[in-house]
Image 1 (tube, helix red, strand yellow):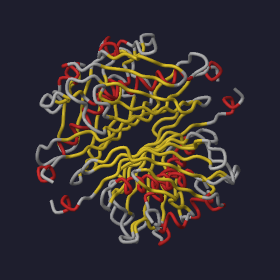
Image 2 (cartoon, rainbow over the protein chains, first blue to last red):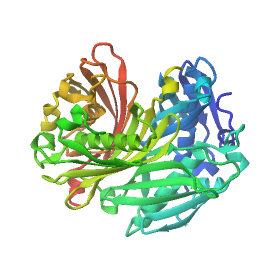
Image 3 (cartoon, rainbow over the protein chains, first blue to last red):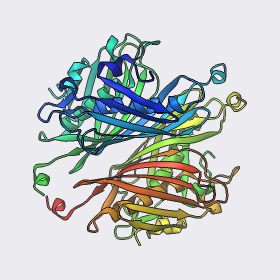
Image 4 (cartoon, each protein chain N blue to C red):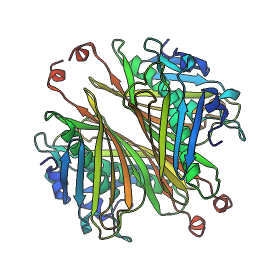
Length: 134
Length: 134
Length: 134
Length: 134
């Protein structure tokens, strides 16, 4: 349920697990997600979207109560291009939750060969009820 | 021409200018790009895609000859949510080109009110002909 | 006054200006700051320290009242090595202050030739009085 | 041997292990490394220096032959302040080495209580002999 935003659904992504600060997501290869027509590899923006959504899901699953969260910043490292025609899966872990901030790390890899494609580190802002009245 | 990848076209984005290391891009608001159904604001992944494409265009326009480039890493800072129903425009500048790496900075803002939505810093890898034989 | 921490003083750095969200800092070349004995260039950690301190000073100067701040995260891009024997100066600008977060961008360059050495983007957390009681 | 630069030695740091892409480093608490006189916690710049040096050591230890390396960019996330009076230890792992770039991840924690203080992701540039002649 965590990952069902119109955008992420539109590109065919789904969050397959999110529990206790750990999350997994998956996106199938599709022609309209291609970044480079010559190679057929998926656009970096798709992988970033996957990681962003996934990290958010990990944060949500680490909270004791549902809270509005927002990506504050994220860094993506692209280790290698995604393989043509292959689904991409991602995993993320929420490493720390403070009153206002949560820190997450994640990675994406080709589903078939388990090769790591990208790394991600992100900080999310949490909006707690008491803070909103300040 | 720089920005015509299937992915970026599919989400309705276009690079409107790229010259001498400077580039501009634009993306219209669309329902299928929404990240949060309650607010109607565009998904962070769309803004990241815009900035990634835009930074690549700035790098390409800074080169003396066309070269294959790849995003090595990028950092996005989300300063505020995009406004609902408003187009987003972005600007990027390539600040440095070395033999193998190019550094870029960019930002995205609401077209109507010029409010800055996001900042971006990225490094791209350049694949020069002589390096490929090594 | 903003920059007078024991650490920054110990490495010979000083914040020379901080006003309205803009700040400048300077550090002289010194033998004990060298990162690579073969070239005599200053260690990246020194430049990072300069940029971190500088960004904090820019944030402080953007606030209406003094508040405890803490670096949440920062990204440094090293564009080229610092020149041997040359002082390094840095400039930073606080681009956005929200209730809990401030965003800053900065850069460092050789004092003598104005060549940009490094770029920096950072997020700082602000601790406002009302938030502390939550 | 990897970590013996004048700078890192001057602040009392040492790389205690570096093998097969894994590295560990340590730095003792010292008064002149304090960032905030009120709390006695070590300056973020010191932790960044530790992580930068450590990541470089992990990269060096992952190479088949010694090569000149340079930090291209790094991102630090500060999860919590270092404990006063406590040594800080760090661990890093080189996750990928391509022809020109190496990617590393690391973390720093209080030696006594194992609490994670900071995370780090970095990219290093490798200068291979054949590339230099290009």
